[in-house]
Amino acid sequence: MNAKIGLSCLLGALMLTLTACGSAEFMREKDQENMDLRRQVEQLRLQARAKDDEARKLAGQLAEAKKLQTQVTSLEDRLRVMDDMMMSKSEDIAKLEAQLAAAKEAAAKPAPAKRGKAAAKAPAKAKDAPSMPVDVMGKSADAPAKGPAPAEKAPATDAKP
Image 1 (cartoon, helix red, strand yellow):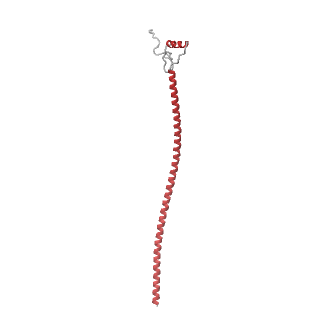
Image 2 (cartoon, one colour; image 1 turned 60 degrees about the vertical axis):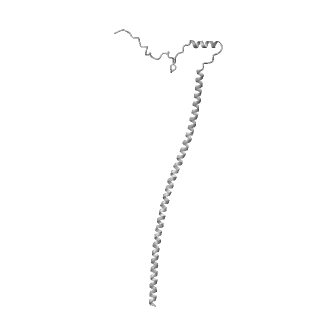
Image 3 (cartoon, rainbow, N blue to C red; image 1 turned 90 degrees about the horizontal axis):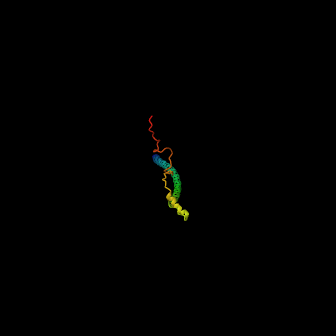
């Protein structure tokens, strides 16, 4: 019996040792899994931070793009206003050119002759009056210029000293 009890005790101790070894191995595996999970969690955190940084960067670019879009819109509005102004100025210029052309045509037509004594005198005056050429500045060509004319030099004297 003593031998049976001794064997039972040894068998129990061996079982406890095997169980302890199995538990220690199991604990090591669990610790390894925990370390792997922690590494994965850390990688996911780093990826999340990188995504947040990228999102902030894109949000900044979006805000800048919106500012540029508002500037473009305001410039387009100003361009439309300036275009409208140019169109109205072009229309004004066309009207003034038409008025000028009409005025030139009216000036080019001879005045209608009045009936009676004045009508008979008017053609005679036109025939009698010589036409004088007029230069660009509105002066007649026969009008004296300031200073002596190049052909009008002082008369040369034959006196010798």
